[in-house]
Length: 88
View 1 (cartoon, helix red, strand yellow):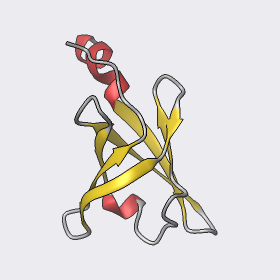
View 2 (tube, helix red, strand yellow; view 1 turned 30 degrees about the horizontal axis):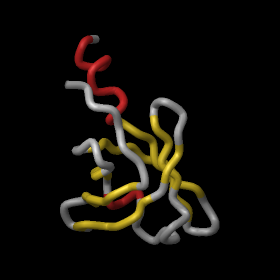
View 3 (cartoon, one colour; view 1 turned 90 degrees about the horizontal axis):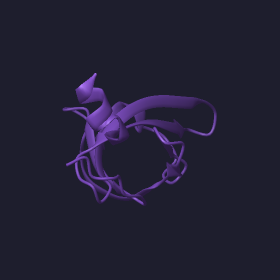
View 4 (cartoon, helix red, strand yellow; view 1 turned 90 degrees about the vertical axis):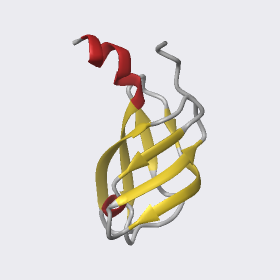
């Protein structure tokens, strides 16, 4: 439970859409300034800018920039319009 208490603010839910259906996934922040990673398949074929990232504290944010992605390795690395509190 100590690990959960320390890092739960780094985990988020993400919702995307292709205009017909809504898709759900999860991800986690790898830096305090909003760099995050999630699974590429959650984003494949979806409308850019329609994603909603829901944080554990109830805040919502969007992707500001895709840094890297790989369909074959099923990851997407991106920046978001948020920051997470330091747990140091």
